[in-house]
Length: 257
Image 1 (cartoon, helix red, strand yellow):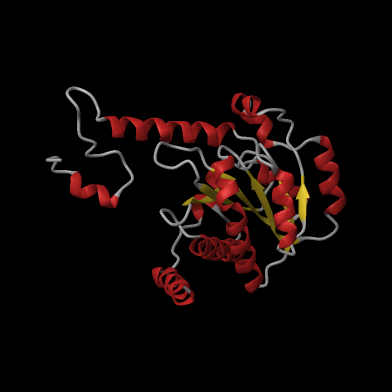
Image 2: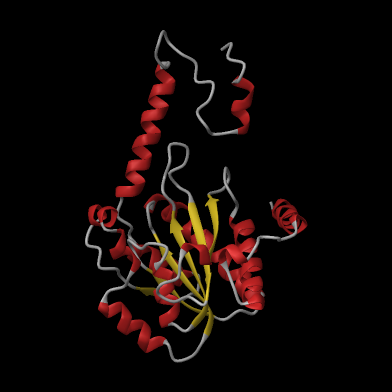
């Protein structure tokens, strides 16, 4: 191919230097696009097997707590974002019964807009996050597993558990270059009514082409400690984590391998 951009393809997953066949795309480029589109649709529409995921969480010696939103189908989840931001009445009662003492972090996992992302990366990321928090002596509540949840759901769960921080691991909206990306959202002093400006987001977690589990967990732990020390999160909490710390994490991973 004589496209001058062809050498740049090694640096990005963006669809550049695709070539052409007459006035259209070459067959391979067209088929690749259709496959990516189908993968994105599948990621959104696929139902999350939360029971199987809960079993895997138990195998990590963690306590899963299965909750639910009022959403009854993936179609409704897409049409009614508001229903993904709240728990059912029974979910409220379960958490109210558990809120006997304060915890540092309420951890929530939801498939969000990509069940594929949670299936492929959720368990490994959760394990890395829990390890990072335990190493720092932070108290964790049960791992709340909630299908069809939105980011703001963490506010309600964190408040009901009397948590100082709420963290939700959630499947991100799939695109045509990635259908398996996870995001993590951190909120200090979670409560219903928090705005997106009060959250910190770590996105594109999907090794090997995205952020690694350990790097994401380390950044989350750093931001969590800063949030607890300063009493804030979101736009007021800047990510000034020394780059050296992430480099050391990467070097440690390479040594293990």
